[in-house]
Amino acid sequence: MAAHGLISHSSFLSSFKGRAPADARRLSRPVDVCSGLSVRRFYQKWREDLVWRTSRGAPLDIRANSLAHVVENNAPTLADPIGPQAVLDKLEVDLVTEADLKENDIRRTRRTKMCCTIGPACCSYEQLEALAKGGMNIARINMCHGTRMWHKNVIQNIRHLNSIERYCVAIMMDTEGSEIHMGDLGGKSSARAEDGEEWIFTVRQFVGPPPSRTIQVNYQGFAEDLKVGDEVVVDGGLVRFDVIEIIGPDVRCRCTDPGLLLPRASLSFFRDGQLLQERSAVLPTLSSKDWLDIDFGIAEGVDFIAVSYVKSPEVIKHLKSYIASRCTDRSIGVFAKIEAIDSLNCTGSIIRVADGAMVARGDLGAQIPLELVPSVQQNIIDLCRSLNKPVMVASQLLESMIEYPIPTRAEVADVAEAVRQRADVLMLSGESAMGLFPDKSVEVLRNVSLRIEHICREEKSKSLKPLPELSTALPERISEQVCNAAAEMANNLRADAIFVYTREGHMASLLSRNRPDCPIFAFTEAPDVRLRLNMLWGLIPVRMDFSEDVGSNLRRTFSVLKARGLMKAGDLVIAVSENIVPCDQAAMLQSIQVRRVP
Image (cartoon, rainbow, N blue to C red; front, side):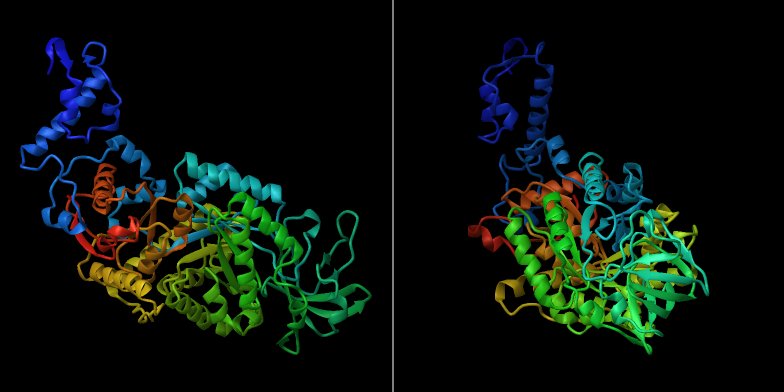
């Protein structure tokens, strides 16, 4: 210490042997304590830290050369060149997850993700925030409804919630596809068809609202292809009509199963109990409107695009190639919606080329016998897990909550079974988009998921099928085996968490595929990767800046999570890492560490 209360700049820097804090290196003269108290406290803190460490026999620079060195010594180290508060600020954890980790045991966090369809009932900023606070991981915008400007406002509100309020909500855009559907009911939110009522389905265009009990149809060959006696099924069977007369472009029908008609609801047709497939066959999977919507989604930065009525893997390949040419700075996940017999005929080949799949049970249940839907759902979930592709279960999970504040017991059992099958995501459709109780629907989904996940872990009541190998190439096999072993080790040791450091999310997905008992913290540098990881079962995506020293990443993570109250000393962690360092340090990778939080 210099005279008159001055700190010698040169002597202070020399004590760090070239590793002084960045703020300290920028100073070029002594600092008077009277005019620089804050700077002196800054220096004093660093000097006290140095004295504390050296008093315990630690060398001045004990930054490890390898992960094994860190494990072997388990010694305190000098802080990284980033200041403590800067580290806290750079580690981005979802606000809802952070609150859950602080209030509950780390192993009791929810693993099954939730997707909410955004509609008139939940499109305002306050309503979106309520859904995000309730646990919404993915917001779905359905291009069958609303204008692009309306969807643009929704996207902007969600991005604002993420950047300002610290939520982490990904955005999925759902294309309209080759769906034959009703019109918008003249601007009405709904209409009710009663038993025995006669309605007109027509392809005619009207100036203004259509006449009473008249429904417009988007398929021009509608009247020519139907016959008297055919059955028209609305929205997967919620309302049914029998064709009683065909007059030019108009098809007169009688309601046989009454119910609520919603704008742009899907239509399917049966003759003698058999589905008429030729209607969808003449329509393209992606229409000209769909391509314009896809351009809109790319421009607005959506995280996922779901393709409706996929008939073959070629359309998925074509779309992914198109996205890659238009979007070079980031990736957009392409999901195949399995909702038609055409999809079931080549499910495996479709899912292999897609980035994920959605089991759209509403339309699917209108095209296959109802009793087959549960087994088809189970088969698709198992197939997606074996191929390491995320899978969503959608349609009518809590359908009664469109009108009522509590679900039926059968609906709760349905949700519970999807959780037991280890689906990655459960999706709300009308419940959130136009229901009276969107917040309560999310709450029910969350509570059922938490309870069933806990039961499965405690009772091991749902044994998982063995996982087949994904690749024959050695590097990919190494990553796969490391993740399989890490998940098994975490279960056997009852670890509190698995840490994975990933640039693209691949090893995080391999860990999620194993469905371990503990949550998986997936640390990544890229904001878009963090959002896409929201789709995977059991992952807690966290954005942080990596250093080239893998051991430093781990120490910083422990320090920050402890400081935020998200983990505590003694918690057991299994840590794995992708290639986040230069190739000449590759020997440090593909390893598993077992660490206790210091």
